[in-house]
Image 1 (cartoon, rainbow, N blue to C red):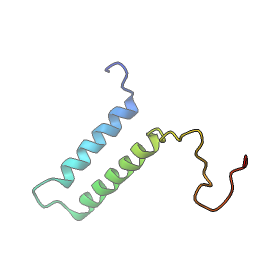
Image 2: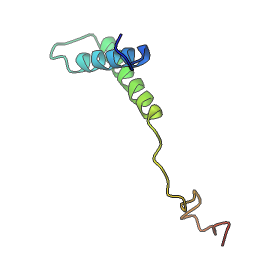
Image 3: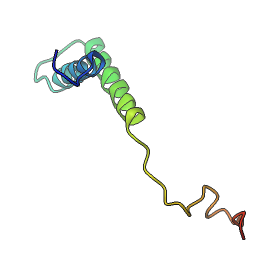
Length: 74
């Protein structure tokens, strides 16, 4: 096992490569296989989005901006 790469990352990467290979295959595959590969690719995309760090907000920016509400310190 390589240092710094968990088994989860390796499995996720392997599934992503397999799904991409199935979706890009130039031959006719059974519809259930293609549908399964699409779902795997979708799930991996969702997991990647959930694992990504959320963007940092500037300190003065509030969630209520643009809704017509006054900031609490005004």
